[in-house]
Length: 97
Image 1 (cartoon, rainbow, N blue to C red):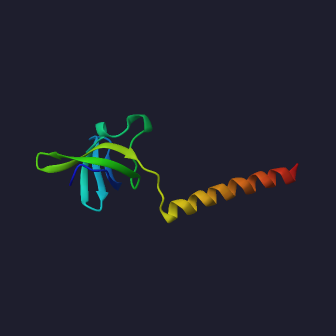
Image 2: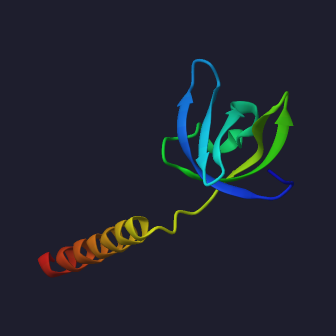
Image 3: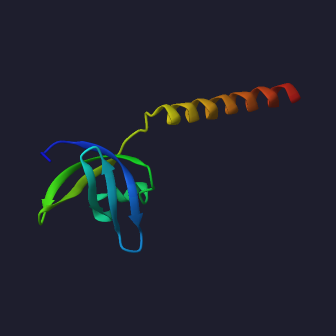
């Protein structure tokens, strides 16, 4: 793995131990919670992230982890459904007045 930005999804995270693994096309990569943006809360399973990689005693470790917007078809569909639901609710509340 080179010095570039990789993308993946949180595969697992153990809050009691403070570490987990990110699944990426290159394989699973270890991460520690100290390398995750603390202001945004703890990582959640299947959350998309961008990260850099460093050598950690012969194994790879994710650093400079950032949350990435989920642009999958499923995520886009969920956003559309949520938007349509809010529009429908607003229209119905106007009709009831």
